[in-house]
Image (cartoon, rainbow over all chains, first blue to last red; front, top):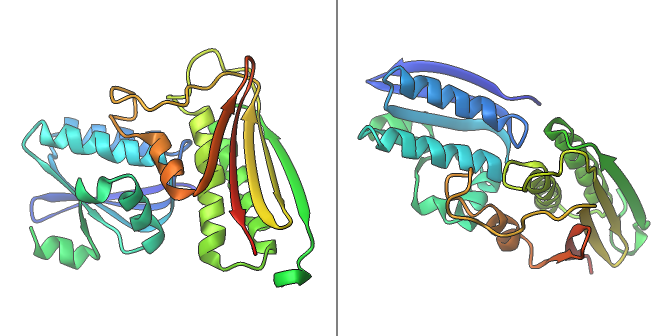
Length: 112
Length: 136
């Protein structure tokens, strides 16, 4: 499955719904999307990973890079992820403590 | 689905060019072989992640320069244990660098944290990552 990216705005935040595989091949597309949004002035991002089937360290690097980009503008990046196999990757790499991770879009938006 | 002592040993080798688009193929093969062991899907997913991650580290931006012509070979086999060996005839940078293009992420930490039996070996001309999961 390839990478799909859908973007919409809600309550002053920009939600990127990501689907498919974020790996060494597709992660640059996500990085470009984040860079594009930050360049347009979208500094509060919500990355919805509910439909992500695979995530490797290249994808993690893109997320960390995105977090640094928005923080440089006093912005935020929240993740939505309820899949144990992906949450395990965040825990192993110590990134579970770096990102704010919500279990659902409703939970993330309620916490804004 | 074979399970326990009924499962038949298998070895599959795949060699890919240094094209990140091909890593998905390695993941599919790794998952397919892992599934033949009869273990659960959590195990299959771990093997899929490990094989793909090792290839990504060999092919990605952090691997080092002058590797563009070197293929990556992956051998997945199981008998008493499932083994995944990923190798390339080149010296890959196997250290994490805080100032890398991965934005400070310690990319190798994922494999080291994920796999209990994980080994990186290098000689003058090649690099091999070996990962092993006991099946008994």
